[in-house]
Length: 116
Image (cartoon, rainbow, N blue to C red):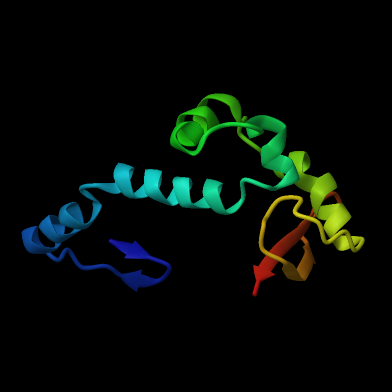
């Protein structure tokens, strides 16, 4: 098999078993990461639209049920406000210290946030 011009070798059953071991509890790990993200960002304007007043113990199921899949178009107004100098907790509780823009098309620039 060739990928990106590099030949990939099959590493055998040992490598497959290691991969299975590392990903055996991926759902639990993802749930914990989501819980951490929601806890850290519960005061943001974006999440408050959907989750204001939700208790910590029920925030993950509530998030899955009530927060829609989001596209760039959905968060673009928040990103624009940040770019214009609004430093409130719009989409993250961490301060946005840098925004990088690269034009992928004439419609949507790529914005990447970095936090302290």
